[in-house]
Amino acid sequence: MTTPVNLNRFRKEKARAEKKARANENAVKFGRTRAEKSRDSAVTALDKKRLDGHKRDDQT
Image (cartoon, rainbow, N blue to C red; front, side):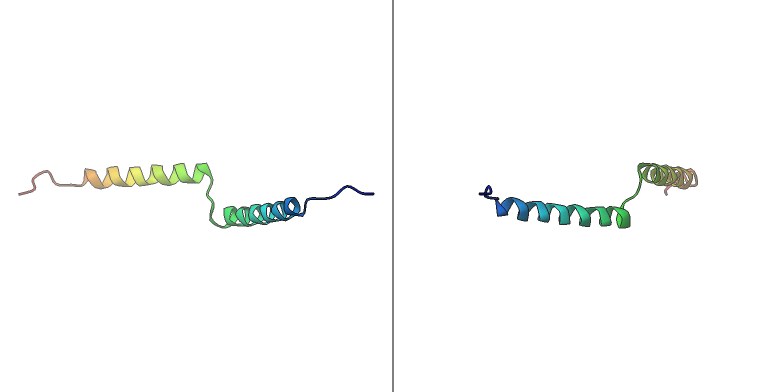
């Protein structure tokens, strides 16, 4: 005789594999690397600094 198998375990493993595949697809579509995020934040900071440098001091 063979040993009984737990069908719930196989069902859950299949669901986990599908979720992982979907997560990988979304990471490729929407994900950005750490370098891209840091570059964007540096550019934003530089733009803010440049804009603040052009402000007038007298607000009257």
